[in-house]
Amino acid sequence: MVYCFDDFVLDPGRRELRRGDDLVAMEPQVFDLLDILAEVWGGRIVSEATLASRISAARSAIGDSGEAQRLIRTIPRKGVRFVGAVREQADAVQTPAVSAAPAFDGPAIAVLPFTNMSGDPEQDYFADGMAEDIITALSRCSGLAVIARNSSFIYKGKAVDIRTVGRELGVGYVLEGSVRRAGSRLRINGQLIDAASGAHLWAERFDGQLDDVFALQDRITGSIVAAIEPTLELAEGERRRATPPLHPDAYDLLLRAASLRDAFTSDSLAAATACLDQALAIDPACAPAMAAWAYCQALRHFQGWSAPDETYRTAAVARAWQACEHAPGDAQVLWMAAFAIWNMAEDIAPARELFRRSLAINPNSAIALTLSGWIEIMAGHTAAGRAMIERARRLNPRDPRGWFAAGALAICAVADDDLAGAVQWAEIALAQNRRFAVALRVLIVALVRTGEMSRAGEVARQLLSLEPHLTVSEFLERIPFPAGTLATTYAEALRAAGVPP
Image (cartoon, rainbow, N blue to C red; front, side, top):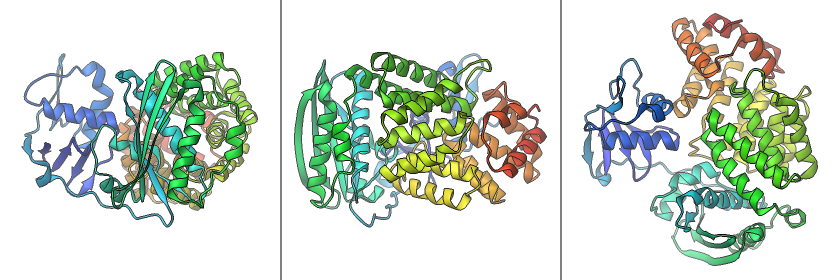
């Protein structure tokens, strides 16, 4: 069943919100919120305390606001209620077709989220982490394009036609599978499917212990590559075999931390760093945990979510460099370390070289391309940065966390004096994540420069509620601006919008 209200169509089966022919980009939890509100619109009240941060994003996605409350209404001292006139229609009548993505020149694959067969919903993070690690391993294959996790994971929990997945993501192959974990025992089932015909090309079951997880992943990856194209070779294969495996408990904590990090709230990032602290206590030489800890601190840093008196920068930079020394050939370690060094080190110049090294190892990493492009834009190299981000968006065409790329493109538009474009990209980012401080800041800059002072002041108040200790001087000290003119532009606009000096 799909739900229609105003000029929107909410399709729980496809997990899509459309306005006319346009697909509205949303975080998964924001979509779930709209789905719940539409389903219970007839009068039940949902607690505001646990949903406040998502309510704002949901209103933004459907063109509502806290002032207008046309569709989502706040009930004082009780909660919220969906008050739009909802009518139900059969899927086949109202669901618009999703446009097909252009096909890649060479072989391309999407890895669907693995099904958790353990009978414990709390183990979902482990099944997701396994699929993500296989995506990373496949991305190292020379000549194989791999769709990023965030685009392929939109199909999680859905019965899908593989041929539809192939058309929507522009790939020729789809991998689906399941993970069953019982104590330290693992069973992984994988099926490789031709996305054009739906025919199964390969299927296999892998059994092992938790401490064999990396060997199992390598076997899966090698089998897939052999089935797709005999001439494809695993890049960095010898390096992977020579890398000491992680401690199983540390690996489990690493996956938990990744799930918490992706929730992208102040509390979830703090919890992610706590998980990584535990992982490093178990395995002090765990380079992925070192890099992930530094990366989480960098996210907290640019969001303004670290306490004013909190000391973390020196430790984060030190761990980033330590991770690079322990795993100089691990692409993910390198880009995470690079982002941490760029944001928090006294000398940020080496970060660009670390990004280059990461992309030389894995040129198909959408997140590395996005963050590297963001850094290039901040350094004044807008054309190069934009090209990297556009490639990332091609590799990750349906990214529910596309606010990273949209925010970076908004900064690029400001640098190129395309203020209308900057507003558009910033609003796209904020439609997906109202908490993204980068998008709020760049939107303020664009609005001030176009003379929309009233709205700029309103956005500045939103920013200050997110970063209550923000001042212009603190911001300039915290955020690196190698391009001096961009720093001046930001400082003048933030002051004009009402951010304390």
